[in-house]
Amino acid sequence: MWLWLTLIVVGILTYLQRLLFLGSGDDRPGDTLLRRGLRFVPASVLVALIVPDLLVVEGSLLISPANARLIAGLIAIVVAWRTRSILWTLLSGMATLLLLQALVAL
Amino acid sequence: MSPRRTAFLAGVRAELPILLGVLPFGMIYGASALAAGLSPLMAQAMSVVVFAGSAQFVIVQLVAENVPPLVIGATAFIVNLRHLLYSASIAPYLRKLAARHRRLLAYLLTDEAYTVSIIHFQRQPDEPAPGWYLAGAGMALWTTWQLSTAAGIFLGASLPAWLPLDFALPLTFIALAVPAIRDRATVGAAITAGAVVLLARALPFGLGLLVAALAGVVAGMLIDGAKRTGPVVAEEEKV
Image (tube, rainbow over all chains, first blue to last red; front, side):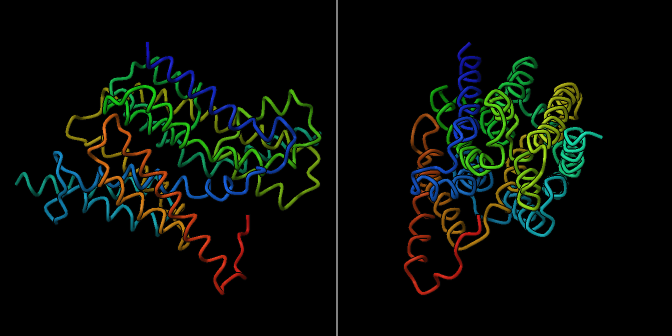
């Protein structure tokens, strides 16, 4: 129930964000500070999402070659940088992780 | 062909290469939404109601971590803030449209539809039917997003258990993050956000993500500001 409500509220807010300048015919975000800040939102949010998934294993920091997700993630970063493709990033990261998991299981 | 039809089809055509990447993206969303405990109906409804890939992935991850709804909502709001920029940047090209048409088009203003449309409008400022171009790109994306979500929901349950499906989320975020990091200021924002999120892990209610994102934005703006007042004033933003 709470989740449904959250989805609907997020949906409405997202629509309003898309509508704000388009609907009013106003061309520019008046507040240039806001405009300058918005540019950094994607990189900041995404990196904050990625880092714990790669570096934190069972609640503690693990920066070591034994951390399979870290290695697979680093390879995916290189592939994303070279190819700019979601598909290749996914395939390379997944393949690396599966390979490392298989090696450990041997 | 009428200019409207031509513009609509041109929008669809411009969107096609992007759809190749959207297809697996939507399927992974559908499958990971189920893996996180969302019902199939809820997973599909989110694709219709929110209709913003990265926000949907973030919501799924936070739901899986049992983050409270208020924090989920606030985080999704921040992730979606970039739509303000799209709205502002595309508005001048659509100024002549009736307000009710602009209200409809706002729903279709996603990353992917915005990107191809703004490129077209900048190259062809005298496009006779700009609204139809955006509608073509937006509806091609909408249809693909709904169908790929449904495919992911349908196939998700039949995927083998040894496949680390949860790893698809960070990998997708990597694919989205790398192109967003393109100069010194965005690198600074990224490093700050990554460091702060590790330091803020102890914060309750998943607030670490919000704090880290805000820290990243502030760091980026500070570096940006330092650059502007420094000697290299020549390379201004090309937005």
